[in-house]
Amino acid sequence: LAQARATAPLPPATRQNFLSPFAAMAPKEAKAADGAKKAAKTAKAVKASVTRKQRKVRTNVHFFRPKTLIKKRDPKYPRRSVESRERMDKYRIIQCPVTTESAMKKIEEINTLVFLVDIKATKLNIKEAVRQMYDVKCAKVNTLIRPDGKKKAYVHLTQDYDALDVANRIGII
Image (cartoon, rainbow, N blue to C red; front, top):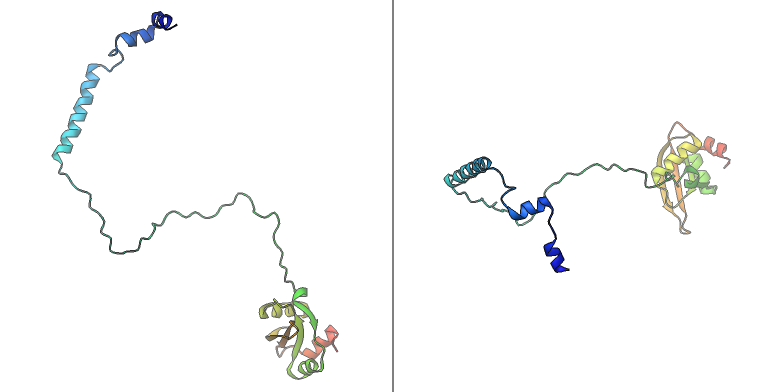
């Protein structure tokens, strides 16, 4: 089998390359031009003075990472299929009005309504919920958490609104 391969005739192109390795090389004129370019480049390098690369002197022991390009987010699709809704709506914030004698006294004397509110509600949430539900403006809201764990809000109304009228509208009195 090895002998058959050795004696098998080679294709013409392969035979030419095998016989004459210099046949595929560039002509002499092109070689001379390349040599001249190479010689000019070497001469230029030899004539130029050798310069050492200057090392940057570090004056600080801390290394700060270089600032690189930060691209703005450009999402291809929404990560959530539906928008999340606000769970603390006005009906969850204000649970019920307080109708004790002390609360009634506050309604009559200092223009203040008293409500039991959600434990997570903030003063701004309470103020906004009262404005939406009863169409009144609050001057100030005071809150406290009762010993039984419920939050109580004292909603002080502005001079323009009367707490007694609002209480009648709600149905406290």
